[in-house]
Length: 347
Image (cartoon, rainbow, N blue to C red; front, side, top):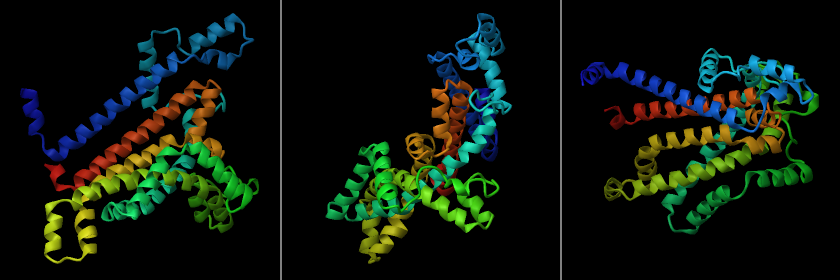
């Protein structure tokens, strides 16, 4: 009880950041533990991946000890935990480089793809959800709900293959798999790792145009899945607000319908939409694996998948940890914005 009183006596401006940081640390340790255990119980022998099947028993045993696999599992996890918090995610067997360096090269490609997809989801999904709520029960509402339903139902690999066949193979409107045509690779210096931004910083509009032609289709496919989720949630939030008494009172006062919808109803769902957009963005960051494989996109999803097929467990664990960290950070950021924008959450 005394400890609880002392904690509550600490000013809120200090207590909340400490609480948030503690939550992040505990969540990350839990994520690391689960990821570590999964990596150990998987039917993959990391020793064989290094020494090969023709290695002698002496070579196998020496590598086994060098990797620390002879230690108890909790001891292995402790050393793994220390390495991770020092920024050491191990060395990739496949590339021969530190996993952290590999992730620095691959993750910006995924972030670029997911960011554009989320922007499409926001720009199209929010107005579509608002319109569906305002026109509830009409053919407009039915079409909006059908669009969202299709987005949830169609497998992403199928729509990706069909999109490549039609827009690249038949019509030639977009670029093919990959981030750039071979001719344009390595022409601009990497600054952010995102080709669209780096090409603009270098002032090379030709590279920018080529990169845009390659990213527009996979980003649009991810954007479709994002807008399906965002529009559905927006419609649900708006319906709740439009059925409220304060909306009826605003209409009775003679306010225009546009003002009632956007300045009253929509304004009250803005805080909830922050969480929805953050979850959608995090979902695209971690769930774009199939899209990256279909479009040969050199992102973190394809990196983890290729590493898993190569029994490169250090790369798999490192990539999973980074994606999990991003997911946690986005949730914390949305929570912070929620508290800043909603006065009720500050109490």
